[in-house]
Image (cartoon, rainbow, N blue to C red):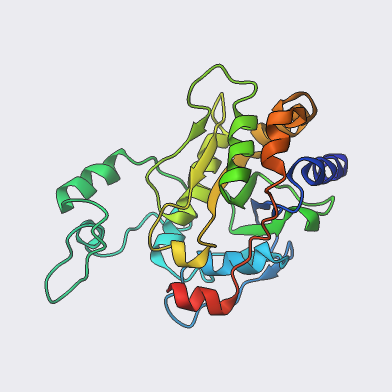
Amino acid sequence: MDMRLKAYFLERWKKYFGGAELPVTCWYTDDERAAERAKPPAGHRCFLSDMEKVRQGQSLLFDVATVGCSGGKRYLGFSDEAMPNFDYFLSCGIPGKLEGERYKKSPELVREFDRCAPSFAAPARHIVFKRWDRLEEADTPAVAVFFAPPDVLSGLFTLSNFDEADLNGVYCPFSAGCGSIVKHPFLEKVSPRPRAVLGMFDVSARPFVPGSALSFAVPMNKFTAMVENMDESFLVTKSWKAVQGRIGYKGTMNLKDREGAG
């Protein structure tokens, strides 16, 4: 990690976004000592439930054995297998056998969606998640992930488009929550013109993030350019000052709130 970039971003984030929550970073590695290994789940556990710990400052390392749901294993690239009857699970279900999530109108539509979806395989055995201020020189962050409310998203969205002529500098794919912060931004990382990924619209994942927050995930090659552009962008204008004064978001959902949401 370029420690100058780390400090440079922290200074400007405080200057332009005040008390807004810092991003979480992630990268793949074969080094099992890169962070504390997440505890293996006792049963099904949504991967996003562990992100709350990372957002509060705990660094965690995951592998195929410590991701507690089949979707998480798939969208983090540790498996290419969908759960049995996935086409019915994502749509209408099977009466008396499987409750459907009804996110797609029919099993046929799910199968077509699955055929069109890009594949993603983890490039190493582990994935590490660390909050930005916890990064060390030996770390190699590949993606920065913000969990942010509308005013912060407005700033991030506009900054990501600052040096783009394309109307779609930010990408919003239909995706599981974990796919929107890992799979899709990692695929964008190797694109000739990497885009930011707006996400966390997954209804099943929503109870594990604050009710006011969506995710905004940026490949580091794109993110570095965004940071370098901050001082000459709209962030220095009166227009942003009018928004900036409202940003006081702390961003963590306590356990009581989360249980109530689930």
